[in-house]
Length: 188
Image (cartoon, rainbow, N blue to C red; front, side, top):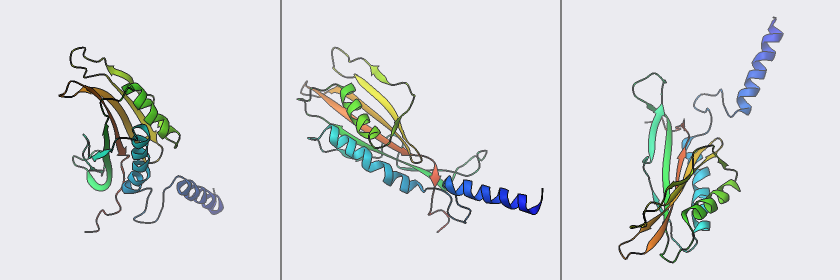
């Protein structure tokens, strides 16, 4: 193969990497984890607000916390900050007058997200547990979604009996970015 053939292969490789979102320039190779969160979080918040418009949602870092290192070699003992993922949760608790089931609430939020380009993942979902007949707690559903190139979300809804004896519905959307580039790594 001559020089002309190698140039053609090199050009094809550069075009393929560029169209895949990669860059050959130092310091820039694909999306940044904060950009991914900025692309996903507004959708998740809007889904909660559209599903439960009379409730003011709250933000939490959720079970996964907020930002975590995930960079470095795959065989290293510790991850570095060259890549990170971020996780945030959105919670909304209904008034006792809410008559929709956890399934209906979760399906509403998922429908909102799929209308904005999210994909439902092939993951076990549906009713997680039946409600406890004495406490009213436990009825719940969990559905997993993916926003290509950014990350994923878990939409969950459940029933809970409060101290007054009434049952409320709780909707949660946990958004987690993929393990993506950290633009601030090694700037300090």
